[in-house]
Length: 200
Image (spheres, rainbow, N blue to C red):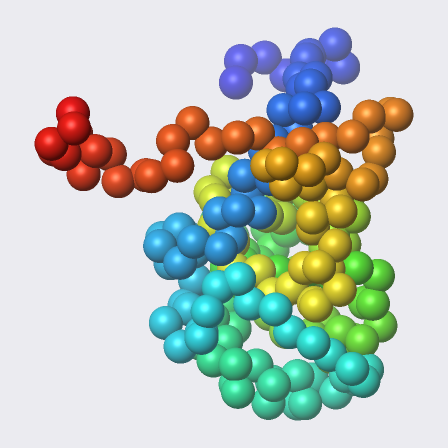
């Protein structure tokens, strides 16, 4: 980028609310597609199914207990990949409070019960996000779709209320408006099958 940084430089662009909601809904949908999650570099071969929804009754306070739970679910491989990827940043950024780089691990999405997930805070690469304020920077870091997300049961059940569905609008209003998910252009994504069919 040419010239020093100036305060009048236009750093941000205003995006319409509808487009922002569409973008977050798309990134949430991408977290359920195994090919996209693996394409992003997450180790999910031992995971039973995506999206992963866990139901935590009691508060987990010890990291050892959290690792036992994750090993039962087959997630430890992704945690180990984040841990082994930690290295020192190249260049002058290492003097400016960003000395280390680390691979992104799983994203825990909750609906306010963050206290129950205490034990996961110390794991390398793990992030947390509230379902009522989903961030596209956490759902698609670096602009790459398909972050490996672990949902709490309450958070996953509240998705329809927040985003609505293709037929029903959302229950939560923003600026006095509800929102309905956009309808897909085609219901069958196998375009090759459609083009080679007898009807066409």
